[in-house]
Length: 468
Image 1: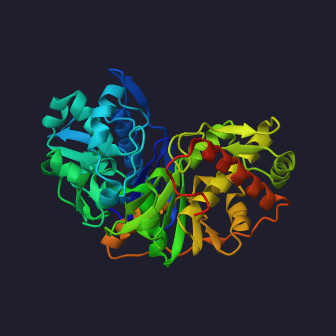
Image 2: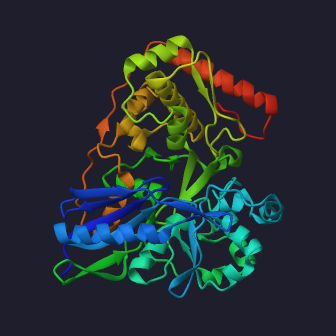
């Protein structure tokens, strides 16, 4: 079967993995989703990559049958890597949400390069995936020794479909400890550990790197061009730049809330507040702050999955119910256990308290990343109903826009493929958020900031002040 013009994008999140099919005009023709399965193996939590690959190949073939897909692209969540030798993994892919054994952690954490070199803060679990590579190297040196390539997560899937092993800068440069943004080269850790020879040559995100064929129902074979994958939040950043945003702050939301502001100076980044320099698909440093906002909203809201109404927000503010950080690891308030202060609330009111908490954390992060320009909000938190409106009310001096699709990472990945084909079908379809005049919100914000500043003062961590 001759390749078609439609583009299939696998947007591979930690919690949900999705397939989007884009027509030549940029319209979404179809979508499907699954949940990746994480399993225990030898006491370590790893990805069931074969189960995910099975879903990917099956859904991709359906997309070819139904929409004449001719290209496939991958956008992947951060903090994840694969060790491969020839045509197989030398070790299953690690779940980044697990801590190395303490005895190993003490040995490997002293190897991390300084923040001034990598702009990667030292984070727990596998949030720096160089730390997890060090873990495997210390625990099972033969596993890393026999690997001929260290592949970032999107490049693992590009390889599975094309057979080509390549690297990509937006992923390797994403708080991994592996990249030195100012040098635009690998960090001292990579050379000290002898890993450079295992890092494949760089290829731009979206570039064609090979082909994939698969059997169709009529006996014919699909023949798709495979494109080099990209880090998901950096993909979203590329999308909004490609449709005309220039001086802006991106609030990319999913499991993580990742906030990019290129206008923030690098010397304003505080490694103790989960601030870092991401790297764009063009290799440029992108000052960033993040917290696990999607996960925190899910936990704090009790799994609420419907929009939150204005009345529920008003009742929570009136009752003085505050969500306090942090309900998940990482973020600018590390070392604190998330909890609610004030009267007990349930149902929609609990979800309202969680939404106010995530909005206030985002507002705090915007202050820390020195955001004064326009704000673009993308991703899952848009679906809570009033997140953009709350942020517009909290940031009256800034224009706040939200994406109608909430799938910026998939659109960015598709845009990179279309770019490689000399096409640019996407247009700016964001809408400006109208601020939500919620009585008592400003006093509520001041009270919330006072509560968290009091908590910080009690432990006196070495961080920049919250009103930076």
